[in-house]
Image (tube, rainbow, N blue to C red):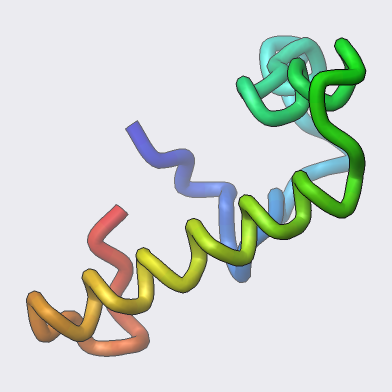
Length: 69
């Protein structure tokens, strides 16, 4: 489920976020910590994912202000 506090690509309550959020590590972060990828590779993966999301948005005609996630 998307978090209602996630706005403009970041947490709107980051300083006061829940403990579960503080402990959470996505797969990409785990790969970085384990040394399997470097920061530049991680950034490239994130940019590719964002590009794919924009492409999907266009294909299903979602208005930019509406977020289907």
